[in-house]
Structures are given as C-alpha cells and as structure tokens.
Image 1: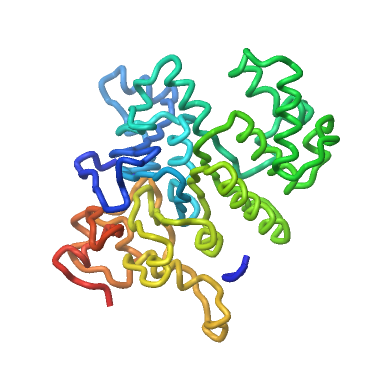
Image 2: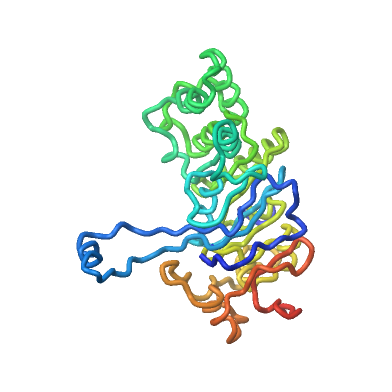
Length: 356
C-alpha cells in the first residue's frame, strides 16, 4: 500500500503516561525461549557427565507493554524479530518462559473457571494465512459454529445458525456461502471468514498477526477498512502486527517498534512518524515510499538481522547502527521514558542527549 491510502529478567518494567488503569492487557518482563529436545548422542553425553550445549533461541526478551482499552496498538519490525511470538503469548496460544500476561488486571496464568473462560473468549487471534488457519475439510458453517459449540453449550442449534449467518453478513459475505469449503473462496474472502470466526464469540481484544500480508494489494484496503469499521461498531481493541509501516500508520493509535525480541521504541503514531527517536526506527521509516521523496534512492537496513540463537552483546542493534558508540557493544540500554507517552531503548538518551 502507498503512504496515502525480548531474556533479560533484570530489566525493570517501564511505566509511561500512556499506560494507565484502563489497560485491558499488560505484559511484564515477558520472555519466550525455544529449545529443542536433545538427540540420542547428546542424552548419552549428559548421562556421562559431559552435558552438551543445546542451542537456545530467545524469541522475545523482557517485553513490558500495555494495551489500552479501545486502542489500536501497532507492532512493527523486520521479519524474525518476534512479533508473531509475542502476539501468540498475548492470546495464550504460547506460554511465557518468564514474566506475566495480565488480562483485566489478573495474571492469566492464575485464571481458573469462569475467569479463564472470559480470557479465552475475550482475546482472539486473526492469523496471517487465511488458508492454513481454516480446516479444509469443514464447511464455513461448521468452522464458524465450532467455537460456539465448544464454549456456548447453552445455545440451541437454531441460535448457533443465526449467529453464523450474522457473522458472515458482518464481514461482508453472503449467507449462501455458509455451505462452501475454504478452497472455494478467494484469499480476501478466506480472511473475512477468519475474522468472522474470531468475532463470533464476541471478544474485546483481537490480535491481528499480519492479517493482510498474504492478500493481493487490491484487497488489502478492503480488509483494513473492515477492521476499522468493526472497531467503531464493536469498540474493539487491536494489537495490529505488521511489517508494513504505511499500514501501521493508517491503523494504529500507538506504535511499538520491535527488534530482535525487544521493544526499542513506543510512541503515539503521529509523533513516531514525525520524529522517530531510535536509530532503528529512523532507518525503517526512511524505507517507506513517498511521493515527496520520489527522487531519493532507497536502500535496506544495513547488515543482516543477527541470529536470535547468538544475539550481539550490549544493544542488539549496535552492529547495524549508524550512531553506535563504544558503550553500545557492552551495555544493553533500558527502555526509558524521554517524553510523555514516549519511551525508547537507546544510550543516546541516557544523559539528556538528543538524536541528531
């Protein structure tokens, strides 16, 4: 689309003006580590007292973030930075290795009974690939009815059918499509089915994981407009994950920039795009095509994204940063508030320095 149309457990949680008692979901020191099971040879070495080093992938490292009720929080960054992993932890699909996720002020890990059901139904996810996230052997009516059958046994078959029809109409699909299979739809229509499935249990919060990335450009605007319409109609809260900053600019009230599993900058959308503070954010924004800068040559972010299996010491961005200092390769910066509603993780702001 065009411009128009984190593990470091010792890092403290950072409060800012945008975080308040009205947060619907909060993450505190949230981390996620992936390890593989040892092969036979490694198990034998361990039994012999020679424990091998098994690679550890730190996908998300000590994230502190709040999502306010009714807002759209954009989450942006390069592929592989941990955005989708963070989104799955927010919905409970993936458990956290460290830290907590709180919903309506309660730690999700401690929820039981009705409170756990409220979280399960209240936070839903719209996946990136609308084909692989739908059961190819089920008709649309069965796909949409399944959440109600599982979670709402009090509803009659007639009531479930009525809700299925209403959900199809709400996302712009004809009720007659209810007996079709997913392969009989276009990509945009399949994504609408995925949105309808998320909405049918009447959630408060949607995690949208790259929901338009797999769609044709001509269809993307239609789906974005659908998200905006649903937000107004239902007063929904979104975490909108995308690598396309032009889409994030159009959708989000606030934007969090993520790099190698960490949040490096958080700000209101207008302020972040007008005056980015972190060098990584500046580099990303320079890559957005613009009519004003049509004569400027574009280049990608210098260097390659480091492997999360072996992240750099100090600031994770320092090997690619144009403003890197000797301190950056040694000390990891902390996310700090530099203005009301604005936080950044960069040594340039440790002592009232400003980025020039």
